[in-house]
Structure formats: structure tokens, C-alpha cells
Image 1 (cartoon, rainbow, N blue to C red):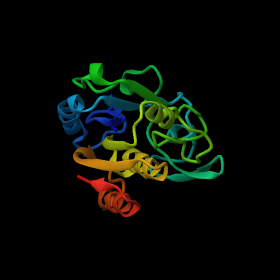
Image 2 (image 1 turned 90 degrees about the vertical axis):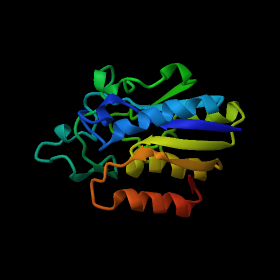
Image 3 (image 1 turned 60 degrees about the vertical axis):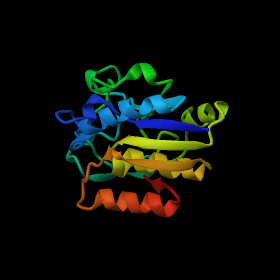
Length: 198
């Protein structure tokens, strides 16, 4: 059985948001159009405490895009975004949230970022996503959302590692492209790991 995973379709990742993904708003209509085709729709939600160590504001002398070491792993520094309880952390206006069966929050640990919907970036902790999908009999996932080169890629690679047949919905992803070519590198990496890009 197949589930649809909607990755981080939140206000802060849309144009005008704190960590805007170029043309990120264009994937909302894709999500709405596709949701009725699935019995199981799960949305991830970045849900950071205000003092999250992935925020450049927490590292005096550093700025967005810098790479620092946090809790033993490399961390790219981002603008403050998707802070728990703020408007920016809410799902995108116009997203048909009534069709979402489960919301999985990530990035809650203030010391560890969590790009993937399954694990934190150090794989020290996991979300409920794997167990929820297994409990529903899902062995295949279609993935779309924001952003291709970070949270989508990490979720796809972990889904494959966990044994889920995985397809990336190409019309439903957009990239940050912090560095030129990031989107293509992400697509190549997902494909090489066994994902279908549809």
C-alpha cells in the first residue's frame, strides 16, 4: 500500500516567509490535486523551539549559510524559521489540511536539526513516521514538498534505507539552491539510492 508524504508545506518556506523556497507556493495545488488518490496522507511539520541551534541568531559572529559544529555534527545555519506556535510554522494557506491523516513534527530537539521526516540529522532519535506507516500497512511512499535539496532529499533517502519503495513527485518539489546545482545533485542522489523520479 502507498502513502503520500507532504514535506514541510509551511508558511515560512513559501515566498515571503523566513526561509523562502523560490516558487515554493506552486506545490500547494499539486498536493491538493493528488491527495484524494491516497488513503494515507502524512504531512511533516518543522517545529523548532525559539532557541534552536540551527538558527544563525544563536551563534554570535556567524550568519545564514555558515557551517558550524553543533553536538558533534555539521550544521548549516538558517534564519529563524518554523518556530513552534508561530504563524510561520503553520501549514500553507490553501492547503487542504482536512485530507491529512497524520502530522509528524520534527526539529523539536534544540540541539539537533531534523531534515528527514524519519530521523534527526544525527540519527540519534526518530519520529513516529516509520511506525505509523508500518501500522497502516504501507510499504511504498510518494514524496513531495519543500525543499528538494534538504528535507525532501533526507526523507527520501531514509525511506529507501527503511525499505519503502519510494517515488519523488517531480512537479511537487522545489529547491532552496543555497549553492548552484543543489537541486540537480539532490535528484541525482535520490535516483542513485533507488528512488523513482516521476
